[in-house]
Amino acid sequence: MTAPSPNVPLRTSLERFVTWLEAYGETSQDHQDFYASKVGRAAKNLYYRSPLLGKIAVLPMVACEAFFPWTRRFYFPRMRLPISDAHFAMGYAKLHQVTGERRYLDRAIHFLEVLEQTRVPGFERHGWGYPFDWQTRGGILAQGTPLITTTPYCYEAFTDVYRIDGNPRWYKTMRSIADHCLLDYRDIETGPNAATCTYTPTGGERVVNASAYRAFTLFSAWKEFGDERYRAAAERNLNFVLACQLSDGSWPYAVDGERPFVDHFHTCFVMKALAKIEALTGHAGCNAALARGVDYYVKNLFDESGLPRPFARAPRLVVYKRELYDCAECINLGVLLRGRYPALDAAVDRTVEEIVLRWQLPDGHFHSRLLLLGWDNVPMHRWGHSEMFRSLCLRLHAEHTAKPKT
Image (cartoon, rainbow, N blue to C red; front, side, top):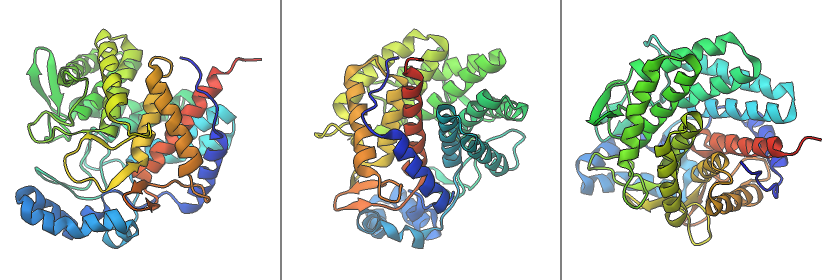
């Protein structure tokens, strides 16, 4: 992997963000605030059942999101989200590796301890979900339902810190998470040696990024623990993901006939998983899928400015031009694939420069969204801030490790 160009002050940016975060706190508003309340859930449910009436019901929330994002706090209080805690842990772990400062490792350990306290109760093994009731097309996913799109980040966080301090406590938790991912989700056969996993222990199959997350986590666990059951399940989920890639190189969100949209960060999720699986296993199918996927990605998910755009194929009205989450996942993907695809490298470099030089506010946090009119400056740890922190830490770590030793 070639070294990223250190043309922006990453370490200074990250130090400013850390100062802001430690003053602001570990809870925040969230992307789902408008729909997490009883009123919001009811409006969203009506939208799914009766689109015309539902559009009228959600209109006030859409207007608030587009023009008055600060009103989130009136819909739902600040909360702590496990995805954020996992990303903060990984970011601080990378900062420790770059700087050698113990305080960053201590912060990473703190977030692991929080994760141990906030795991979903009622399950033998470690899993995490959302701290709110989530209205979906299929009904309400109750607060505390484990999600295969959340739990893998926690596995990575415990792994990253274990690689640094070797604490057997983290290793034990890693094994528990791996068993949860293997045993507490269902596989549904989709073809020869291919299967989609469920989004939760009870259902939600055919979501492409969900199977990609599980495939990577189980391949990683197979390498870590040598349990062949992990590899066998991972292989079936990977084959499902590869089969879902369309002829143009894209992946739809789901192959259920209802959610064929193609968006920025879910595309990144899929390609990140493939890049990690390829690094672990050398799987040739990942290499071919990534080549086609990156080609589609750089041509269709960046705007006329060469910066991340939310959708290639949108499922609904989009009330913003650009968001922090997309930019964070772009940078994450770029670190994994650095040096392989020049067009992607250039797009990622532009995105890093844009974020550090134009999106970071004087107090250290970032704009959350570029709206149709103005900015959304409400800090949302899960919806961009923790992911951006981790992505910039990964980028800094890549620069640090690529420097020649003197």
